[in-house]
Image (cartoon, rainbow, N blue to C red; front, side, top):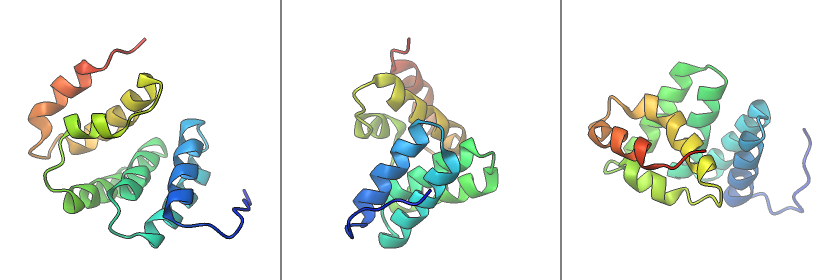
Length: 125
């Protein structure tokens, strides 16, 4: 998918575009946008998070784990509770979907004790 962005293709453009693609199920295109966002800002936690959830959807578990590990490396005090608050989609089901995607890859992390409470705190449906 070729996209023109008027020469303003920084991390925010690719990150936002990648999440939009992810939300509509265009995972290969989301991966391309996520890689662009990450290359423009290598230590941006949210770019790595986009890559992680995209790899999860594509069934690329090892890549998803590596991207999730980068998220935790960048923000070692990450909790799923914080993450749920930082993904403030208008539709709470969209936030739930992102947190649920990451949940399986962060369970081994020390923050996993909170995972169940955060997962169940979402009102879905």
